Amino acid sequence: MPLTIGDSAPDFTLTDQFGQQVSLSDFRGNKAVLILFYPFAFSGVCTGEMGELRQRLAEFVTFDHEVLGISCDPVYALRVFADRDGINLPLLSDFWPHGEATRSYDVFDERRGCPRRSSFVVDAEGRLTWAVHQPTSQGRNLDEHLRQLRAAVAD
Image (cartoon, rainbow, N blue to C red; front, side, top):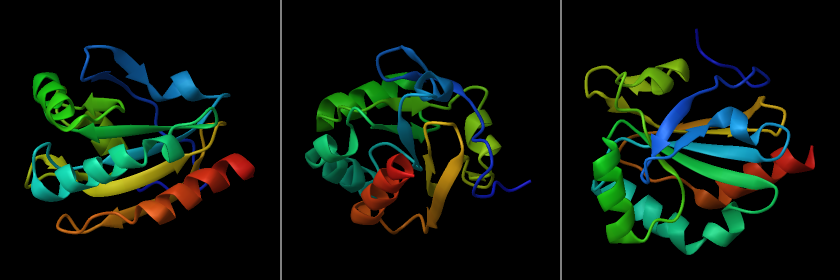
């Protein structure tokens, strides 16, 4: 069943590029979270998005909000991707069980075996406040993402 704004965000625990477990519920009561599902590490659009986000990271990661990137790439690939491109945000692996967290947000592309390019803002209470789904070939509008993330904190 598709998620709607105001729903409780499905919790997940995934491993980041450093082998650390990260749960969405870790942020409940403290921070709003921007969740960025992206198809593949090292692909052109994803590399460009993460590079742009890296340059603006201080705007996105604050005392009030956090950013989590999720793909179905293995942890080891995410580590090389982060190291190569200087990505300093949690890149979470939904590799196994393959796409389980991605499916819980209804953004898993069964044909390609990867997440769709989708974004969700979750407020500090764990509710979905915004979602957008981009074509795989189109990068995200980070200005709008930042505006929506800040709005989740202001509410």
